[in-house]
Length: 284
Image 1 (spheres, rainbow, N blue to C red):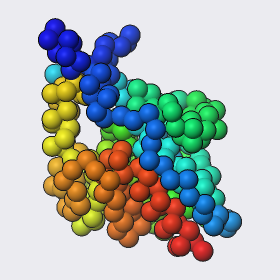
Image 2: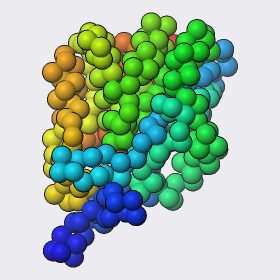
Image 3: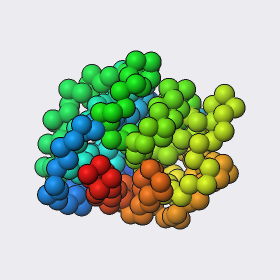
Image 4: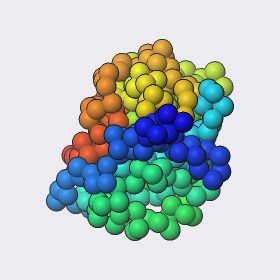
């Protein structure tokens, strides 16, 4: 009751899950992003597609059994997409099985007209995405038209993605064909899929920016999460040989070979700029 009075209690939703408390929303979300509307020299070659893998799952079961209302973070998805769109790239939206994309709508920047515009523009694709399962079976021979694979963050990127064989297949396809892989925050958890079936971790020795487990462990105190996380992403990646480039949930971005990563929602704009400029330079 005291937590509720102080605005520290997570908000109970109709399906029994919890979204962040009033205080957590005030501290951890924005109504307008820091997106820089840059005019790039648009890419006009044949590798114009970016495959974007979203989660189709909403509820994450925490260690205490409570469900966190999650999905892909809208800022982490849409701000990098804005930069890539301005640079001349288009998007092919997929989820694991083709079910609708799930966003953390409680984190949507409602006063950001640029973010609202690209969300509205791709709303049909978010509602009716393609299936990664179909893509992995039928489209891996079509690498010539793709520039990159983008896996947005948000806690939901840990649902149905790190344990999916088709994600591993698609990551390997991107790597083998010289495509860039772009991700941020909890999105690098997708790389754990490459260890399925006793396979060697594909990103051993890579430098990455990843959301710190230390921050996830603290956020239940302000009601952002309704309990402790079911898995520690950054520490798991570190144990597999990843070199973590950040210790805070900040705007750190990192590029290592064909991998571009960012630390948190605060890195969304910097990640978008780095990805757009890198793709334009490499593909020109």
